[in-house]
Amino acid sequence: MKNGLIWNEQGFLHPFLLFLTAFFLLLLTSGSLLLQTKVQSTDLLFEQYKLEQAASITFKTVEKHYLPNLNADDDKTFKIHNKALEANITITEEEQHILVRYEIKTDENLESIIYYKKYPS
Image (tube, one colour):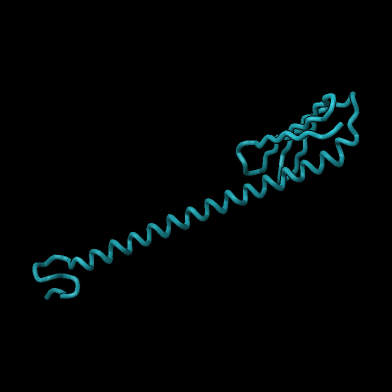
């Protein structure tokens, strides 16, 4: 005896059952893709936040400790390294301003971010 809810009188599956199955699979795959996209965007947002914090820490460190104590004969290349960031700083003195090149890399970032900032002499 055949089940009348699943099979029709010719022995085939009912079209509404196929439609419900396809709709369920479509909802399942689109939901998982949406969740995967949200997870990736959240990871990128955290990485951007880490880079901005690392840049802020580096800028404040250079402005408070390195620029006021800058002498003409000192080495103009500095390195800041801790658990959260790695920064290479190059200071170039020009006539009217000081140009500082920041190369900042976080622990998870594959590429370093390069900033240039001018300070008055």
